[in-house]
Image 1: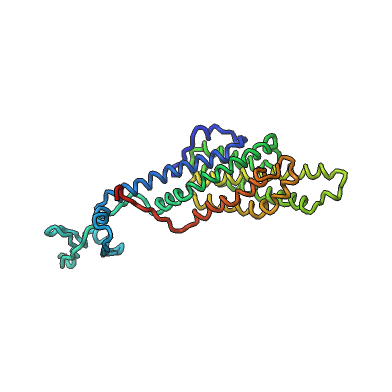
Image 2: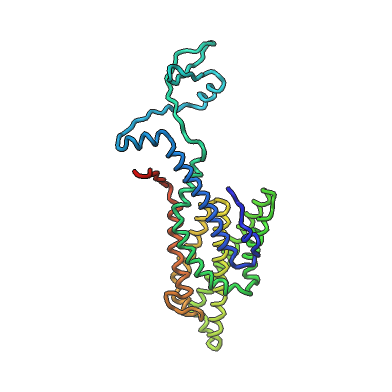
Length: 330
């Protein structure tokens, strides 16, 4: 897979809060361009094949084709001369050599086939094409969430976010490494660090939500208001870093061509949104001074992200993809 990145990405600082979303966007566009090239090549090859022409000329007719499946030994015998192929009166025949002589001629039908790309390449291309619209849809919601995320992260480079920024820095440094083994190690370490930061912050966020949900602040009525504000600041910081880490991990996997891993990250994020944010969105909106409490509020937008992420995961996990080839004017 081509892992070239634009100068815009290469010049971004690890502390630039646009880094995760820009990486995911650029990585997906890169893979989508490859998918377009692959599907176009498949289409062009099929269009120029004699089989396709015959099918289009005889549309609607049922055809039967017999294919001989030979073993690896047969192929080896053909290569070393034990079996030879010859053309007799316009027909392809095979002869098996025994005791130094070639025996009976066996008729063989020669069939051309396309040997340019693997089925995995084509499958990946079809999967990318399938989720194209869903990625565009989720990107819009990510942009809306990112506005509040960036506001929270500004000036918040403390210990709580240290692991996240460490993971970002590791990946940013790996981009400039020429040794492939070292690059892979750094990328793996970056993903591990981002994962560790996400889990730690998820536990912290869940603990803070539980504090608000159980109204533990009532134990100190004098400072009740300030306790709620402090907890909401912590929750916003944790959520922002979890969001950034998830998007960055998805971007890294997509940039490496690992679509299923990207889907796994998005699914993990989806479950976090569904299990932690959706059921507490109303309460969080009530406690957050920056939330309008309406449909366009911060926490309502965050809760809505879950649906679109799930759609992408479902499309990527579909085992069978179909490419329809149509002829112009038919």
